[in-house]
Length: 611
Image: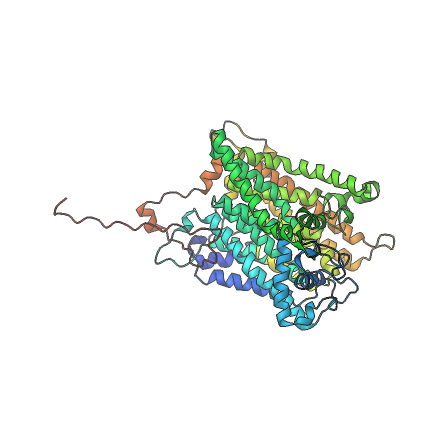
């Protein structure tokens, strides 16, 4: 068997199980085409993982009086189907906001209404007004669990494939021919990594939430932007932002990239103004459509519209300043350093919110400035990663589940940096351990993390990597000027041995922390010592990932990005020598538009006859 240079880069490295299987199926060292059944198999396996996790306990199961997020989602269904729209975000006799009051944007409310209608048709007692609090029959739990699985099957997984199509769509692997069999191994690996990341599965299908909808809408938006369909991408991202306000973590990246693209592709002031105005108008109109029902709602007592007052009731529920700087033990700056600086006791909520705002802006500003000056498709993904991670580390009112936001762009970077895409999901899952332990998801946590590490850790199939091209950007053409040796080695981490040691240190640290929790009880004075150790360790890893992401983004330039993603024009001889790879298993064509068909070869003219 042929051994690549990477296999010998580190004594700790071994090719991942998934990469080995895909390479074997594809043949030609992973450069050939996979059978058509591979992607449907990955899709089915991802659903099976979600179904398996859904058999474990959910948040607050059997723990009155507030129960947990499962009860919150059920209660929102109860409220939305039994009360008028103008009462959904207002405290009334039937809707006590102190008991899991609706605090997500309108699309979540509309989703709760739709799902509540389905649940009421199958088991009306589960959403009966005022009498169904804490309702947890086996049948109702199955209905609720299946609703999350259907949401992932409709939004998250097809959106993951739409992104893969959009990223690889302009390459050689997008050509279609009549005798082609399937997609290439790298596409399948990228899709499988997105589909089987353990943190999202554990939170949505174990803890119980519907994050897959907003994350799926965000991926659709990214796919549209990569296809240069910026208007559709803006609409889709507005939908994601109006499903969960945490999608705001990605807003600076979308703003910077779209603004930079509009400025770079238009040379005159008028054309630039029109390009920016078109996107701005798109966002305003999309927001207006989503929020219009609350503006137009009628007050039956006065027979007048609620207008801005109705919109204000919703906005008031989306800004939870009273909750404090952070919740529980979250692996961000404020929680990890609180034992030293006592932020919570020294700062009032208003002061803490202003301090968090300043720190967040300082963390994301360099990444945004880079995309405005040098917009590129790869840089856009790095900007999403850096901005969302900056929000998670420094923003106000972050909680454990917020780590799902920087996880998404880390997974989207799988075609560019497969090592980051394989390592970062493990860190995010570890950071959520205090929450998952509280939900009694010990077995599901261990099984999902070990399975993902076995499948994905070790990198993508094939020897060529976009990471090498990116790392090479640290040196200018012609070798006239080179960056310092440390910076060059840092930029080449995905191919160097140091990256392998980072992964091993992460696994050893995680095993040590879990072993310490099992065998060494915390002192009575510090009962949450183990949680603090986990979050502090993960904060250090997140901070390192933020530094790494910002360094990597600085190495991306529009010229290199366009050159790296451009498909070389193949000659007739190369077409005969290279097997064509098709994309026959198409789930969606909304964000990723159909790719152009290959042109038919012209028949050679017969010799003789009239010319």
